[in-house]
Amino acid sequence: MSKRVVVALGGNAILQPGQKGTAEEQFENVRKTCSQIVKMVEAGYEVVVTHGNGPQVGVILIQNEKGSDSVPAMTLDICGAESQGLIGYMIQQSLRNEFAKRGIQREVATIVTQVLVSKDDPAFQNPTKPIGPFYTEEEAKKRAVEKNETWIEDSGRGWRKVVPSPDPIGIVEKEAVATLVGGGAIVVASGGGGIPVIKLEDGTLKGVEAVIDKDLAGERLAQDVNADIFLILTDVSHAMINFRTPQEKAIGEITVEELEKYQAEGHFKAGSMGPKVKAALRFVKDGGEMAVISSLDNALDALEGKVGTRVRAK
Image (cartoon, rainbow, N blue to C red; front, top):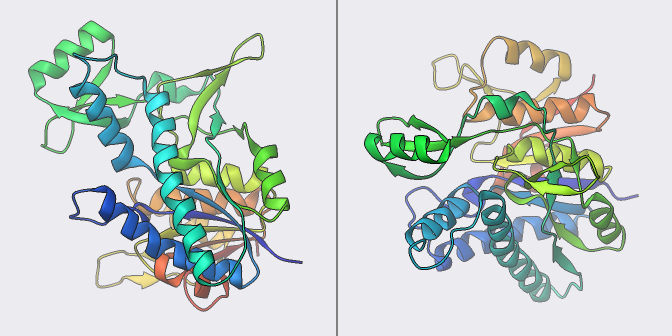
């Protein structure tokens, strides 16, 4: 029986550092990424793909801001949905083309995915996730008062709006994803952490202005579609302890208990490897067979145990 793998693509799969972010650049990066995904399919894995969207949704927010004098600006949840569509289009077209080159007949589909969060999540009282363009301090403080928003100075580059980053508790379209994957399709889902929604008293859903961590949303997706393996692809071949010090050491096979020890010691920073390690631990502790952290060009080798950080219960 084939293993089901949720593959979480890092930002370098779509946009490389130093690039402008043109459609041509992003398509070329996605084409290279999809050749790695097709290798997994050829090796017999059932694949569900999820991805980040930071640069893309940032551009959409800027476009909305710049055009707001002519047309109404869209809310963050709608901008997130737009980014899922544009990235999903690039991935599904590139996958189909790669399959065609290899004489493989497979269906590929992107699902615009809503991710349920709790309206009582404490993150809503403590917005921390910067989004959108940079502004001067004067402009930021004016917007904060006029729109009841939270703004921060961001790394000396200017002021940015911050929004909550609540914990994902469920994938709304999980049954649709599972049905498609069970039928042999490659599915792209929960892009950018998904569109955060809350459930109202009458059971209906409502989008909220928030950003869900893409790795944690990927883990939730992996649980909800009963994946065997959660594969997190980033720009390094392994998670490291003592990163960028003379004592730097790559982590290979490791148990949950051992990795939690390193986590408690502060080896994994919040803005980089921290969420990936947290998601990997959560997946295995919730019953997943294995979580893997490695680089995009090592994807299949990581699945097969030749490289990467591989987390198991024991």
